[in-house]
Length: 331
Image 1 (tube, helix red, strand yellow):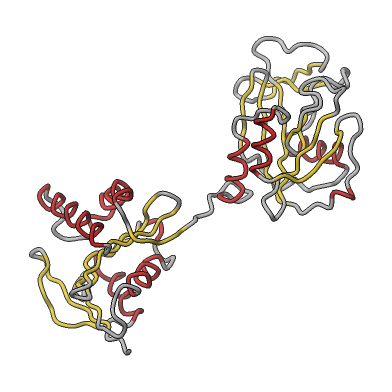
Image 2: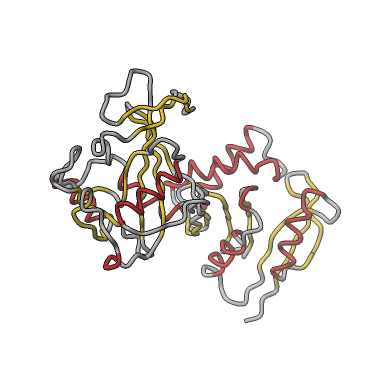
């Protein structure tokens, strides 16, 4: 980070609430107590999830000769965060990137101010870079394992969170929105707490789950299915967002639910597809759901119909009117 060169450079002074005070401060002088400045870092990743890293010149003050993330520097007077990031990239690497629609992915507070970190994806041709000789000795692409090895060797600036930058790149978009990573599988005891946490969210959709005894019975049922290998989950990361219990003997879906915030993403369909791998081909599949005209059951009935289920006889589930649906599958 270019904290020390160009001593005549001026910084805007900020309050602890990150508001400009209207005062300027020369780089060469220590910041007064209670005054803060703005710094930026830009982490450029390519499509292979490699990070562009730079080695600082050995004559630089502050982490000389150490490897750093792609770009770093201080905002000068008049800069906002985006302008500072764009200017630093141009100065240090000699390339022009448009930051007008970018936002810092995270901000790290340090004793003298605020440090905005931008995460950018750009497949840059390193042979076309024009490195700032006063700042940058060399640059190259590096994978996560290599960066962590360099930190362990003591040749990379020890950002405590640098490994997370690689994970963030895969898990969040450039606006900081999390990218769901949904997978399905057969549930084991390690999924039980998350399963029951989801059950608390959706249990109002299932008749007979109101009492303490019914809840305990449901927990026992889930554990039994986990032991039998007939419990299926859908997860976003480590959080379960869909659950399915089924019976091999009856060819029946006994419980199917998806978190309200994840519905209409074909999660239930994916769990059913996994269930089918454990059932005999061509066998009819049954499910008990709400009766026609029950507002609670409109979405469920529509979903089962979309798969090919058709209504069958009326029944009662936990003293609640219900209806069987059957999916007659051809071999």
